[in-house]
Length: 600
Image (cartoon, rainbow, N blue to C red; front, top):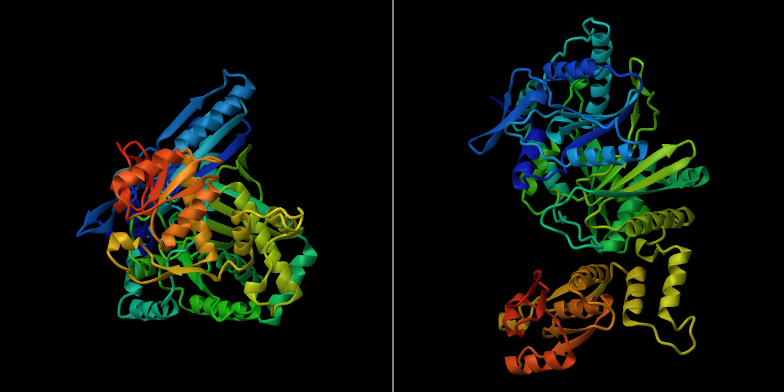
C-alpha cells in the first residue's frame, strides 16, 4: 500500500463525506462513425488499464487516512447495448437514456476499477461510446491521453500488431511519494503560512442568491448559457487591463467577482481558478488527477472603484501563482477541513480560461470520434465561468448547478457581467457599487413593475419596489436587528445585519418553500414571529410567493392563535421551529430555521 497524493486524499475525503454522489464522476461520450472492430476496442481499453496503474487503483483506510492499493491488470467492465433493430428515432431516444442512466452510477473507490465502458450499437457504421471514470483518477489533461493512446492500441490490434508506445517513466503512485517528500522539511508549512495570511478573514462560503433551496447533497446536474462579445469589445476590455498592467483574464475575473459582490454584498469574494498542476515533465503522459487550483481573492472594501478592485486582484493573483506549489487539497484540509455540507471547500464559484487552440478531429483508424454534448451536463460548483478568446470575439459561458439556479437566472448573470464590462470600458474608475448592472430590458421591466412611472396614480407592489432597491444597492445594509425570535431566546441575543442581496436571497428561498407547500396568489399565510430579522424575511417571502401574511401574536395563548388561523383560512404558518407547538394540528409549518412539515 502506498500513500495517496494530496489531490487523491481530498477526493477520497469528499467521497467519504458524500457517498453515492456522482458529481465527481467524469463521463466522456463520443459518437463513433465508421466500421468499428468491437473486439479490438475492448482489447484497447484493457491495454490502457494495464499501462496506467491509476485506473486499477483502489483506496483503503489506514489510521483514518487514504492509501493506494494497486491491483494487477484486469478486464475493463465493457457493456454492449444493441439498438440496431429499432427505428432511427427510437434508437436515438433509447441511446440517450442509456447514456444518462450509465453516467448516473457512482463508483466505489474501495473496490471498483476506475474505468467503465458502455458501447451503444446504432447501426453497422455508427456507435455511441461512453467512457466513465472518477475524478480521483482523471483530470482534463487525461482526456487527451486516453483518446490518443486508445487510438494507438486500437489501430495496432486491428492489424494484429503491438502498439508502439514509449514506456511510462513513472506512475501516479511515484508522483504521490515524490510530492509528499517535496512538502517535507517545512516547505509545506511555509507555503501554508502565506495562504493563511492571504485568506485571513475571508468567508469560505459565498452567500449567493439561488432560485431553489440548497439541499444537503448536490445533484451534480448542470445548466449552461453562453454569450459572445464582439472583437471590438474584447479589445476595449483588454485595453482596460493594459492600463493597470493586468491581463484580459484578470479583467474578466474582476468583472465576474464584481457581479458576485453585487449579488451577495460580501466584501471579499473567493474564486477558484484551475491549473494543470503538471510542472514535472514525467507527469505529462500520465492519466491521473494532477490538476491544482489557485484561490483568487477579490476585495471590495471601502466603496472601491473597479480600477482599485482590479489592482488588488492582480496582486492576489500574482501572489497565488508564486505560492502555487501548495496542493489545493492540502490547503482546503488545513484551512477549512472537509464536511458533508453540500459545498466545495474554500470556494463554490470558479473562473476558467479556455484553451484557444483547436484540436484536430480524433480518429481510431478509419473511425471518427465525434464529441457528444453531454460532458458539460454535470458540475461540482455553484457557478463556473468560462472565458474563451476566439476569432469571433470573447466567448463567455456560465455553468451552474441545476438544483440551485434556473436557466433564466444564468442568462441574467451573464448579462450583468456584460453590463459591468461595458461600464468599466467607459470609465475604469467607476465605483463598483454605482455600476448599473441591469440591461435596458431589465430596467424597463423594473420601471413597469414600479407602476408609478407608467401608470398614473397606480402604486407599485412592495415586492417590486424592494427588488428595484436590490438591483440598485445590493451590497448596502437593508436591515439590522435580532437574529432570532426573542421570545424563544428569552431576551435579545444581539444584532445581525443583512444586505439587500442577502435579504432578497433568503426571501426567495422561503418563497420557493411556500410554493412547494401550496401557497399561490391570494392564499393567506400565518406569520408567528416577533420583531426580528427573520420576521422581515417571512413577510417578504410570503409576498414573493403571492400570498398574504397574517400576523400571529407570539405571546397569545394557543386557543387564540387557533382562532385567528381558522378565521383567516390559513393552511400554512411561517414560524420558528421552537414555536411550532403553538400552531394548531393539521396546519403546515414552514420553519424559518428548518423545513416544511404538517403537524399531526
